[in-house]
Image (tube, rainbow, N blue to C red; front, top):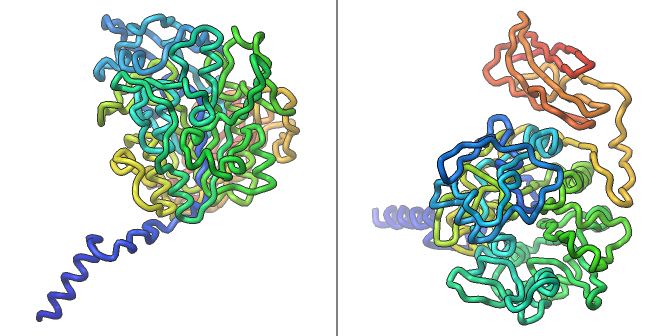
Length: 539
């Protein structure tokens, strides 16, 4: 009996992880994911980009501080950045203790600029990704601060008290702007500091564990793609606009020199060196018009920077296209079925959003931003669990079984692994065409050439049990409707509801759910085209 009790105690301690802590390092999830790609875009709120996305928690209206409700106007192609305000003060004023009605109280804003939004005609490829994979409508920034503090949370789990962007507080005008765009961290002049919540200012030079260190502990590889800038005025300066430049042991390592690359070189490096286990891609940069004539920015041949950041006043088209080019490259490679791609925006950009962020501590969370998850293993549809930047790090911990957490934020965040199903039939790739013109545009991929007429393919598999894929090719942009009918002609489901789609290839997943066995029809309708095909469900 005594031996049995000892054995039971042993099993209990084992199950609660009180002994053999090394067992905690065993992989908790059997996943096919070997590569996590994080793409961080610039300055857009969820309602600004996806407020009109069907099924998501978006809105087309906004509440002002006086109680008036107004319509969100259609956003202009290029938005005057001087009439939208970001940062701790603007964000907390807009937040207004969770009422989300203080956006019009932010000093210096333009109503039309702050209260505006895009739709599927402006962001066709982002909307296709959202339809074909997953869109998170409760994804929040880590803080009410701007880019710097949010990026620090992403790589280190905290921002060292920072709530602003690095700058020279004693400088002004043109010099202040040049100071602001100096590299973050150890390469910046010592006078460059950042404001903290306490009111103090600190130099953005830190040394602490980061997500890179967690990756490396497991013997995994990493790369970062970011702007590498060369200024010729007032002096010749070249630097990597990398958030890891703030972390001493990374910045001073050979890996910083070899693993941090010009974002413009992603495709070349990807094809020559392959894909790292962890890859972060950031476009944190824009040049205000008033400085473009005074500064010579030297870029590498074939570059598409800085248009691609989506940071106002830059438009959305080039940025969306650049993202598509990255994803097309990954999907056309041998890595696709081993990938999880996260796309999100680093702060809300000053644009209206109606969902109050949970205030989990004195720093945030901050205002909501879009997040797309693209993977053959993601569960398709809207994800309404509360996530933040730390949730991506928690996903990395689960998939790669990294040791420990970076901070309390990482430990408390909801794990984005809940958005995945590693037992499902892998979702098909969605290869999309670009729809803007870049300087020195990359040659068209042979796989991207389109036919001169619309093609509706037979679903595959057919017959099928629970799910199938219906795919078609659009030779030109058009409004598209795709519906499924039963044998009697009764509508079963609308898969695409008069959506404006850009020219390209579109695989659409159809989940049969509880539908009975039998013959069904799917019908594709555009302005000048209508075709119907038969499919069979066998259960």
